[in-house]
Amino acid sequence: MSISPPSGPQQPEGAPGQHPQGRYPTPQPQGPYAPAPFPRNPYGLRPPPRFNGLAIASLVLGLLWFVPVVGLVLGIVALGQIRRRGEQGRGMAIGGIVMSAVSLVTWVLLAAFLAVFWDELDEVSVTDGTGVHALADGDCFDSPGGLVGWATEADRVPCEGEHDGEVFGTVRLPDGPYPGDDSLFGTADERCYGLEDSYAMDGWALPADVDVYHLTPSRDSWDYGDRVITCVFGNRDENGTLTGSLRRDGTTLDADQVIYLKSTHVINAALDRAPESEFVEDDLPGHREWAREVSEALAVQSGMLRDHAWPAAAEQPVTDLVGVLGKAGDTWAKAAGADDVDTFYEHYDKGWELIDPEQSVPAREALDLATTPPTFDEDDGEDDGEGGTGGGGADEDRIEV
Image (cartoon, rainbow, N blue to C red; front, side, top):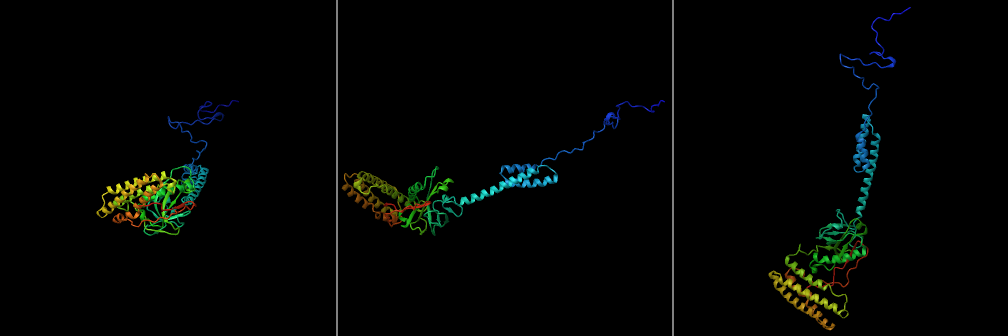
């Protein structure tokens, strides 16, 4: 028995619309020429979530340690965004927060350490925040620890009232290894006394109880760049004070007073260069050379006084003084040419009489300068040897005319 095929046209194997052997159907055109759209994401896959940018930034800043606060804030904000948006980077955000917190704590501890250590950097620190190396000429101050030994504090105060010290000069030291306490004290003694005459030009105006002190760097402050020796006037008595400024220079004196005082510094410098041997017979050549220097200094002083135009009230007293200085210079010149000790002493004694300080009192009075000659103690003050500050004697073996 034969079975007739079904009526209607037959489609060949593999024709459109069929899917033999498990093939997928081919999309049919939707319209005369438009192909059917290919189905989007046929497998149901989603793109991976992106990394949060703030989390990355937080981690980078936490590793750099430069701005820990910013890294900490960015990390916290990033965690919130990651939860809301489903982004990646939670581990980065947490790492940034941890690293930023550690760096922030480190910066705080470092700042606290430096603040404590800075207070101990200077031997004398002014309570308004200025170290003693920044004190300027003319500054008066009080030091609770005094000027002898280790001074730890200082307060600037007006010079008109009582005060412990008055700065009259500073010395800047060169860089290099710490020179040691003995070397620093020796340098301070030499350099501070050299600056004294520039600040207190009229030695007669210095009170008898005034001494010279110096504030020097410690070994610790030296390591942190302290290279300043501060020269200070203070009272000989460690428990005493000063009152009023001791400054006598071009800022407080007139031109006539300055010229006169500069002339006295010439002879004072020569007298300070006396030979170390006390007796002439022990070093006659040295004393003769010194007498020659004194004679030349007297000639220079006479010339300075003679060449200046003095006020009418001072003209005659200064002229009289110039005449005395001329005779004194001739006498010291004779001592310089002495062939034996006895002849030297003869002219030497007369030379001292001619430069007696009383000879200059009339000229000083006419110029409104101090008229009471200073009295000098034979013994200079000694350094206390405890470091930090030291006192030397303000009194020097000198005479002024």
